[in-house]
Amino acid sequence: DAKTTQPNSMESNEEEPVHLPCNHSTISGTDYIHWYRQLPSQGPEYVIHGLTSNVNNRMASLAIAEDRKSSTLILHRATLRDAAVYYCILSPNYGGSQGNLIFGKGTKLSVKP
Amino acid sequence: SQTIHQWPATLVQPVGSPLSLECTVEGTSNPNLYWYRQAAGRGLQLLFYSVGIGQISSEVPQNLSASRPQDRQFILSSKKLLLSDSGFYLCAWSSPRQEKSYEQYFGPGTRLTVT
Image (cartoon, rainbow over all chains, first blue to last red; front, side):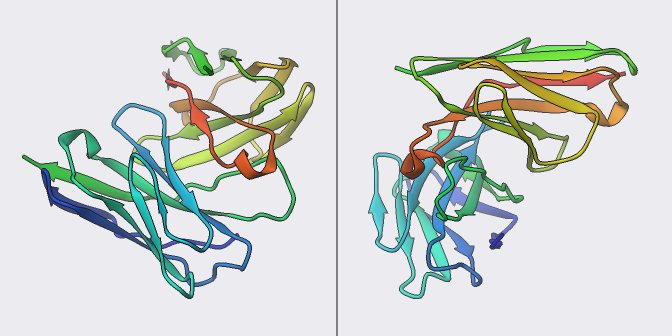
């Protein structure tokens, strides 16, 4: 399975934008890029996913490099509730429907008031 | 809307005792179902997944087993717990449609402590 590399931790100030990077240099042409986050003592929460084009939803934006070897999750205005571990995950699209996710260690985001 | 339930929320069990954790999903049919474990200070590890009743795939060999007796019920079991089985157990579901199968929705989790 293709692997991802994320910083162990990042800090942000409340109400400022946050850019969470993810490197995936061995990504294949059909791998999707998914982002999940996990708040303390809770299960992970789906954030966003994309393939080639940048994606926006109510939670965040996903910027994907043209060569797809890296991506950035953008939180436009960080709040204290965004403090969590953020996981960048690649998933193959080879026709299977089981949707197995392989979680790495993620980036622990701290938000300062 | 869809909801996912897990129980119990917390559990303390002695080494060698049996285990049964239950997960149920409401508001969807034929979901993919998953069991994950998160040991203290570590990432999530996929244990089992199921694409239908009676269909279980194991990702990691261990003393745990899973069963899916009904479409929206997923059970994690063990005959004899080990200390290393302690952790945060999470159940998740996703749509069986290929394009949505990686969008998983997690339950509240069961925190298991084996003493």
